[in-house]
Image (cartoon, rainbow, N blue to C red; front, top):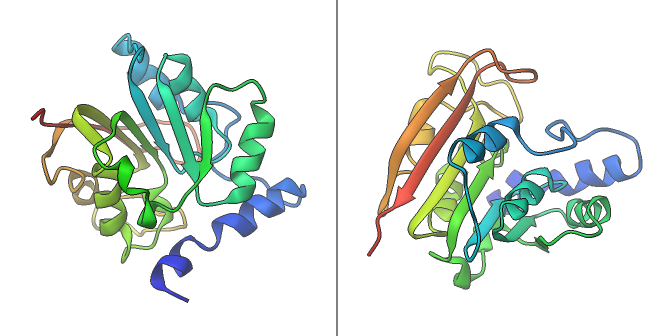
Amino acid sequence: MSADDAATGWFEPLYAAAARGETGVPWDRGGPSPQLVEWASARSLDGAGRRALVVGAGLGGDAEHVAGLGFDTLAFDISPTAVRLARERHPDSRVTYAVADLFTAPPEWAGAFDLVVENITVQALPADVRPRAIRAIADTVAPGGTLLVLAAARDDDQPADGPPWPLVRDEVESFAAGGVEAVRIEDLRGMPPPWGRRWRAEFTRRAR
């Protein structure tokens, strides 16, 4: 088994168990992330004529919200069961749901999306593969496009209990590479469970 397989192989058993009613999906709230909704609302975000990518889309809450803003939305997950459940939960969806592996993403995704939403996926991966995942996500942002990163937060000296493991600031800042620049990194406190402290970070890729 490769390191990538070991890092991501637990997602499908989790979603399969959820489909059988044996467990819940710990990050599923039945709808979009409030931090995403608030961020998009504050910017009166209009996705008409633009493309969006939702990373590790799970059961589709974030993807449906992004599509509702007018974006032509592609949402992917490595778990076939997650993709099936998302389609079943949203039968009239305008989202294109796909099974895909972040580490072997289609080459046509490079620099292709005006908005990329990453919520919890990186923090659900072991530390040794996170840098590759971060680069792969950043690579999908189009020139002039925006990347929104949402994650649980911790300080460097705090224990990293997981999975999913809360991220330190350096990990969030590392999305800014290869032409991607940080716009704003927020350290949100007093958030509802399961993580009372969270990062909300906005990045952009320099236009050519």
